[in-house]
Each structure stands twice: as C-alpha cells, then as structure tokens.
Image (cartoon, rainbow, N blue to C red):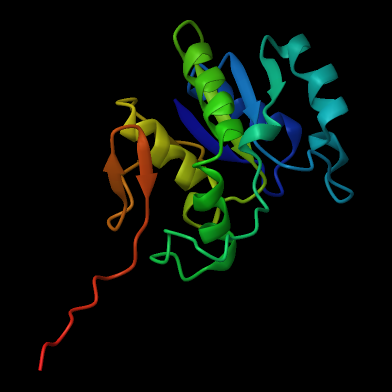
Amino acid sequence: MFTVGHSTRSLDELVELLREHGTTLLADVRTAPGSRRMPHFAKAALAADLPARDIEYAHLPELGGLRRPRPDSPNAGWHNESFRGYADHMADPDFAVGLDRLVAWSRDRDVAVMCAEAVPWRCHRSLIADALLARGLAVTHVLGPGRTQPAALTPFARVDGGRITYPGPVQERLTL
C-alpha cells in the first residue's frame, strides 16, 4: 500500500508516480475531492481520466480529513487540532468501513491512498498509515520520483486490539 499527495503536480506527473509503484487503484481520501487551482485533480476529472491510463479511481469519503476533535478526546498526544480530530474520527464506525474497503481492495490490487498534501507528516494519510500498520499491512509514502519512505507507527500511538489512540503524556500524581 502506498500513500501520495497530488500537491501541485500535473496529472501526468502523478500518473508517472503511480506507475513507478505499479498502482492499479487510486483511493482518494479527500473530504472535498475538488480543486480550483488544480482542476485535473477534481473527482470527476480523475474518474474520467485515470481509467484511460489503466488506473482505477475510487473516492473514500469515510476516510476524508477535516474532522473536529471531541471535547473528551482520548488523543491528547496530538497538539494539532486537526490531527486530534482525525484521530477521534478513527474510532467512528464509518472510518472502519472505509478502512475495511481499502484493505479489501489491497488484496488484489496495488493501491495508493491520495490526498492533496505533498508530505505525509502534514496530512491525515499518516494516521491512515498508522491504522493500516496496526492491521499488519506494509505502507510506503511516495514523496517524489524515485523517493519513498516506509511508514512507521507514530511514536506516541497506542494500539489496543484493532483500535489506535494517541494519548498524551502520563501525568504523575504526587501523594502528600
């Protein structure tokens, strides 16, 4: 399984990256799969253009970003509010449905998970990668032509069964 950010690339550049890694299915995990600045990355454009290049396209709104954190979030390890909100979403049944679909597709296809952000550590793709790693899948982030990085579980992530959380540091209690 790969992850990739379309960033400011052309469609041809993205397709070359996908081909470099044998991708046969692009799973779009953007909440709003459109782009005024990059119209070739709009959902309708990708759904029309990629099959002609022998790459399937699927939108997975269940895995989309832009989530708000819960007031009782168990993911205080994330200081970034949007990552904490996404980590909270990972406990939602909709997230499990989307992740199950992604895993099922990966059994007979070479899948790349795509969002807009170029680098995975600034994108919710890194949290999706954590969830896939927790299920035993290998994940590689595609950074550019000839440049990849194996995904590694976020250091403060905790995996308990199938659930992943990002707790904050443990506070010691002093007894007087």
